[in-house]
Image 1 (cartoon, helix red, strand yellow):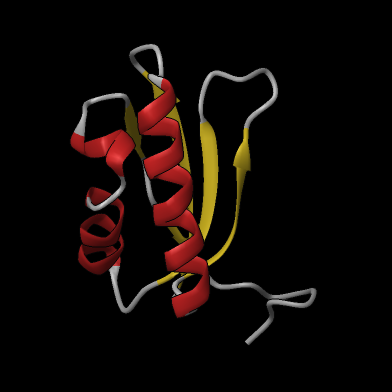
Image 2 (cartoon, one colour):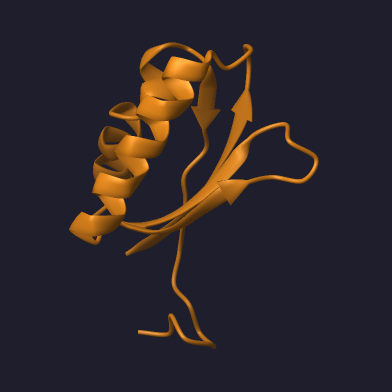
Length: 89
């Protein structure tokens, strides 16, 4: 199942945490769990598009993000089934 996971920032982002977050994203992309990620505009948070078995698995994956572990961001994963476009199953 696919999940769109918008986040909201609740704290400033220390430089070392940003590096750790980006490293986590690169590893999640390499594993195939994360399809795309980026900052929202305006930069009040981000959005991750990921693939997970269910909502609990999506939450568990996002909990590994250093932004979550350090209380910087909160994600709201929303499951969806694409009906049109490149991601249509």
